[in-house]
Image (cartoon, rainbow, N blue to C red; front, side, top):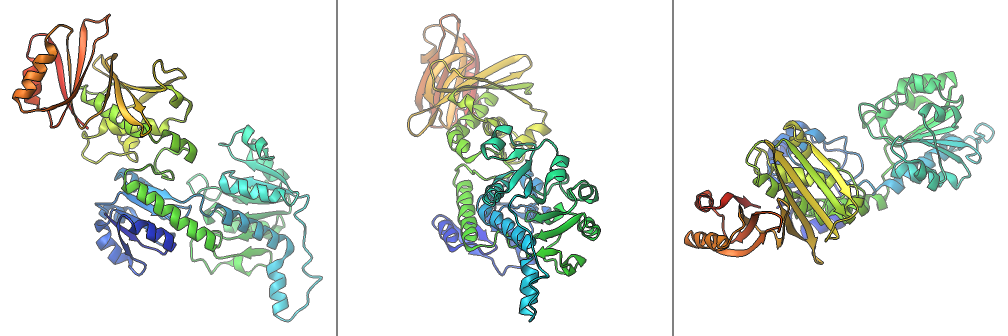
Length: 526
C-alpha cells in the first residue's frame, strides 16, 4: 500500500510508516499535482496547509485513511470523507500541553505587557512606569470548552492561585469537582464573574463568532480574552469595539479567521498581543503529532483499531482498548444475521450482556451496522460510513444491556425482524486472542468459531439429518471443516451450522432444503 506524506512530520513517524508501506514524501507537491495523483494512494498525512476538499476526496479512489498530524481537521471535508468510507484520524493529544502552555504564556504577556515593554526597550526607551501590569494571583479564569486542553489550562492556572470557572455542557459535575473547578450552568454566569476568559471550542456552525457583540456586552467590565483555539470563534470587529469602549481591557490571539493573516486593524493596537498560530509549535508537540498520526494510519491500513478517528463513534482510548476484540465479533454477527433474513429489515436489536454491557457500546453498534450492510450496498461499507448508510436506509438499532451473561463472561446477541419473522444470532470471544465464536442462532446453542464459508440449516429434529447434509455436500465437492447442531429439548426444530473450505452454492442449498424435514437453508460468506 502507498502512503503520501504531504507535509513535514517527525522522522520517527515516517520511519514507522516505511516499516510496512511504500512512502512518498510530497512536501513540494503543488495542488495540481496532488489532484492528479491523489488516486494513487491508500493514505495521506497532512498538517494544516493542505486542504482536502470534496473535489480532491472525490478523486481519492484508493484512499482508506486521512491522517491529520495535529488536532484541528478544519482543512478536511469530513462529510465527503465519511460518505466515501475514508477514516479521518488526528492526533488530539499531541499538542495539548503545548497549547495549554501557550495559552498561559499569552495570558502572562497580556497581564504584564511583555511584548510592549520588549518593543519599547529594544527601541531605546526605558518606559518602566508606562507598562505597569497586573497579577494572575487572585483573579478568576473562565474556561469555555473543558476538554483536554481546557483542563490542562485550568490546572496550570490553579498553580497561580486563580479561581477557575468552566462552561461545558458535556462535562459532568463530578468531573468538575474532581479537578477543583466550578462548573457553571450558563456561559452568561461565566461572563459575569471572570476576569480572564480563554476559549477552547472546535469550529462548528454553532461556535463561529461565539464571542460577538452580545457576548462582550454580557462580560464583566475589564475582561481580558485569550484565544489559542480557532480564529473563527471571535468576531474581530466586535472585539475591537469592545476594546475601544473599555469593556474588554485586552486580548491575546494566536489564531485568526484566515491564515496567513497579517493585515487587520487588530495588529495596530497596544492592548492586543498576537502570535502567528504558535500554540502547537514546539519540537516536542511536532514529534508527538507525527508519530501519533503515523500510528493511526498504520492501524487503519492493517485492520487495527483507530483510536483517534474523528468520524467514527468517539470513545476514550481506555474504552477503545477494551472494546477492540468485540468489533470484529459484532461485524460478523451483523453479517450472519443479515444472511439469514432474505427480506427487508424492519427492526434491529442488539443485546449486550456481561462485562461488555458496562462500556459505551456505540462503536459496537456501528460495527453491527457495518456487518448488516456488508455486501448489500454499491459503496464499500465500514465503521466510518455505516451509520450514515444505515440512516439513509431507515435502519434503526435498539440497544439493551444486562450485567449478567448466563454461561459467558460477555455475550452479544443481534436480532433482526423482517416481515414478522425474527432471527437472532449470539456470539462471544474466546481465549487470549479473543477469537469470535458463534454461540446461538434462533436461540439454539452452539460453540464453534466463525469461518469464511458457512451454511446454516433449519430442520425437524429427527435422526439422519446430519448424514443427509454431509452426503449432498460431498457429492458437490464441498469439504466440511466443522459442524455443530443446536437442538433444545423443548423444541422440535434443530439448527445445523457447517463450515467448509469453499462456498456452498445456492444450488447445493436448494438440493438440501428440498429434502423432507428441512425448512430452510442459507449460504453465508464472511
